[in-house]
Every structure is written in structure tokens, then in C-alpha cells.
Length: 403
Ligand SMILES: Cc1cc2nc3c(=O)[nH]c(=O)nc-3n(C[C@H](O)[C@H](O)[C@H](O)COP(=O)(O)OP(=O)(O)OC[C@H]3O[C@@H](n4cnc5c(N)ncnc54)[C@H](O)[C@@H]3O)c2cc1C
Image 1 (cartoon, helix red, strand yellow):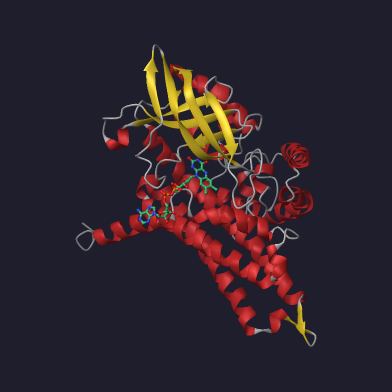
Image 2 (cartoon, helix red, strand yellow; image 1 turned 90 degrees about the vertical axis):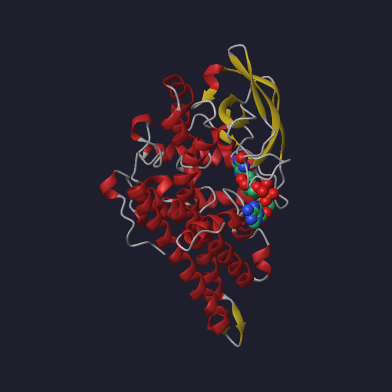
């Protein structure tokens, strides 16, 4: 469904919501079968062509700041755009707005030195470089990233990194990695770690494997990797932000990043919903009656519509609060959208699979791919339970605190 509030024209995005939706359907949806089939080289060639075309239309990098070559759209407009691009697992990539590059662009723009911006930021915005973000470690609970084993120790005028990370999205074929490592093991808990930019060709950087996610290891930008840092030396100029500023920077990266994820999930849910509804009206359940004639099936439609619309409105409200109070002041609404939208998406995807029956389990539609890959929405960027805790603790403060 087209959001009547989504109007991009005053902000310099060259396509209307309707035109963008149509563009995805004609140029991007046809490439999705290559993704499900694991035909990664053909997919990369097809996507490269679309990306050139998007650039030629002046629609490239809508989420990136203007002074480094993006369109610099306001966050609300980015949110509306994200919900449309999210209708395809290739949408954000086709328009130069994909995670984790989009969040690394924000990070480098806010905290990078002029030299780092010149070397990494411009190429990232232009789509000439790819990046990843490595914080989570296989040996520690990612939900509590204050505990990690990856160490960066000073070595002359540089730093040497040792440790292992996993689930670094898009690390396969990336040009550089933003790595979180402990620089002061005995310092205050939130001041122990720093961020480093590690070019992926650096000696001691090892791409161990693409982690198979529900039977699919993917490739390139659509994959998640285990990485090893083995005596990996970088110069002092590779530290990103202040020493000990790792958590502060990671938190800053996650605020608008969660808006991007959540609105992308709204788009994923809309796509699943459309596939479900199209099937409900066309599947003959017997006696010439469509599945849509059954009230139990109608309940899937009504519940899904409400799940999607409440998600969209909650995200737009979080954007309003971020704009009014900053990321820190909007911690609760940000936690709320991460919790609500990931769960709503989970429900909508599950109903769609159920509605399609056996067809829903096949790769004949994009549904199974989405189901495999988007279940993780309730886990990454903080699992549900962590966001519930944030919301509950804040609420209980008014009643004396959770203790
Ligand atoms: C597809 C995908 C992409 C990812 N991309 C990246 C990336 O690019 N870079 C990166 O660094 N990491 C990435 N991650 C890792 C992600 O951030 C972690 O998986 C996440 O932080 C959870 O950590 P964990 O997996 O170690 O789970 P654990 O911390 O071991 O937690 C396991 C479960 O315990 C429960 N739990 C945790 N804490 C609490 C609590 N306080 N109270 C109650 N229950 C709790 C939750 O249900 C949770 O799912 C990705 C993960 C996935 C699945």
C-alpha cells in the first residue's frame, strides 16, 4: 500500500513514491530470483547496471549527507523512502542506501578525520567502496558488548589487533572493516573499547568464512562473515574517534540506524502482505471459492494491515522524537520501534508463509528468502529482550525504579 504521507518532491528526490515503487517492480524485482538461487555473479552484474541507472537519474545515496555526495534527505523522508526500498531485499543496495555502509557513512561523517573522510567516506557514498562493522564475537554474548576479547595494543605509533569476530554483515569482498577492540581493559566499562578502520587487505586480517544462515551462506553484500585479527597492525591514523570512544560511537551509529532497519522491515512486511493477499484472492479453496472467502484468512489480512500500519506510525513518531530530543533523548521510542516492528514483521511473514501453504516453503516466491533472512530482525541490533528491559526500566523509574 502506498503511504499517502510519503512525498519526496520538496526534498530533491527525483522520483515520486509511485514512480519509485514502479521502478523497483520493473528493474529490481526481476533480479531477486538470482538471489534466492545463489547466482551471485549474475546478480552482481545485474545490480551494477541498475546502480548506474539510479545514479544517472539522480536518485543515488538518498540517506547520505549532501556535502559528501549524498542527497541529504531529512530523516522523515529517509524513513518513507526506506519503507519503499525495503519491498525488495535488493532495494537499498540498488540505491546506495544499504546497511552497514549507510551507518558507517554516518559514523565517518560525524567522527572521521579529514584524511579518513577523503580515503573512506567519499568512496563509500559513491558506491566505489564497501564496508562492514565488526563488534560481535563468537565467544561472548553480543547482547552485552561491554565484554569482548578483541584487543588493540599500542605498538610504536600504531595499533596491533588480535581477536575474532563474527556476523560481520557484508564483510565478504568488503574494502574495509570498522572494528571494535578493547584498548583499556581496566578502564571504566563504557570507556574500554575504541573503533578502528582496518582495510581488509591488511596483513593479519583474515576472512575466515561466510556463516551459513538458515542454510544460505550468501555472498558479497548479502552475507555475514567470521573474521580473525591475528597481529593485524594499523597506523595511529586508523583509529576512528577518540581512544575509549568505541561504545559512544557505536551507540550514535545505532540511533538513526534503527530507524533505517525498522522502515526497511515495514517494506519487507508490505511485500509479504501483497504476496499473501494476491494468493488469498486467487487460490481456489473448493467450489470455486477463493481462500479469501474464509474468515480465518481474512483475519490474517486485518491483523497484518494493523501490524504494518502501527509499525510505520511508531517509527515516524520515533523520528519526530529523535529530531526533537536527539538520539539519547529518544532512547525509549528507539527501543520501542526495534521491539515492535521486528515482532510485527515476524508475524506478517509467518502469516504469509502459512497462507501460501507448500508454495510458501519454496523459493518460487521471494517469501521464503525473506523468512530465512528477516527472522534475525528480532536478534541483531539488540534482541527483543534487551529493548524490553530498556523500556521497562525507564517506565518503572516513575514508580521508584526497577532496582
Ligand atoms: C543476520 C545478522 C546480522 C548481524 N550483523 C552484525 C554486524 O554487522 N556486526 C556485528 O558486530 N554484529 C552483527 N550481528 C550480531 C548481533 O548484533 C548479535 O547476534 C546480537 O547482538 C545478539 O548477540 P548474540 O547473538 O551473541 O546473543 P546472546 O547475547 O548470546 O543472547 C542470546 C539470547 O538471549 C536473550 N537475551 C540476551 N540478553 C538478555 C537479557 N538482558 N534479558 C533476557 N534475555 C536476554 C535474547 O533472546 C538473545 O537472543 C548480526 C546478527 C545477525 C543474526
